[in-house]
Image (cartoon, rainbow, N blue to C red):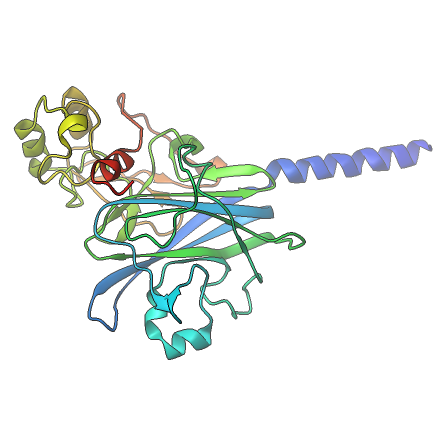
Length: 321
C-alpha cells in the first residue's frame, strides 16, 4: 500500500470518527397551541420538533399526569398513533389536536415528512421501570418510535417528532428522549435521565419544570408554603397525596426537603418553552436558559433533591399505574 493511499485512508477514518462523535440532537422546540374540540372541550396541543446532526435513530415519550387528561381522538373506529394526513384533518378538524408521534412533519403527506415510522416498545431509556408500550391512555404515555429498516434520515432542522395534546387543566411531567448516531439526548438536567427533569405540564402546556410548585398554579408562593405547613410530617407513601397537592409530589414524609426546595425556588414562575429548554424564572432574580447546544448550556446547582418519579408513585396509588 502506498504512503499516499494509507494517508488518505487515515484521513477518511478520522473524518468518519469525527462525524460520529459530533452527531447529536442540537435543539428542541415545543410549540403550544390552544384550541376547542367540536365537543366544546378546551385543549392545548404541544408539538415537539428537533434539530440534529448525523443520522436520526429514534425517539421516546414518557408522560405522567396527576390531573387532567391526554387527548386521543377516535378516527374510523379507534385512535391513531401517527400523524394524520392533511385530507383527514380537513374532513375531521379535531384531528389537528390529536396526540401522535411523527417523522418530520405534523401531517403525514407534507413534503418534509420522512415517510413511514415504526412504533417500538416503552420509554425504557427514560425510565427502565416502564414495562410495555402505553399510548392510548388518558393519563400516561410510554412509547418509542424510530425509522424502519432501510430508511436513513440525516441532518434535519425543525424535524417534527410528535404532538401531545392535553385538557387545559392537565398537570404532570413529560420527558423526551432522542438519539442520533447513538448520541443520546434527554430533557433532564445534565442530560441525565436520573436527574431533575427540565419539562413539566402546567394547565395543558409544556413548560419548564418548576420545583416546589406544589399546588400546581405555575408559581412558588404562599399557597405552596401553606401545603407544607398543613402536612408537615405526613407520610405520603402511606396516605396518598394531601388535598390540593397536585404537582411535584413528595415521597415519604413531608419534611425539610420540601421546605428547602420551596425556599430555593421562592418567587419562581413556570416559563414556557420556545426554542431550547427554559427553566423556572424567579421573579426578582435571574433567568436561566438551558440551550441544547453543548457549548451554550448553562448549569445550576439545586439542593439535595429526590429525583424518583413522583407522578408515577401517585398514579400507582390512584390505581392508574
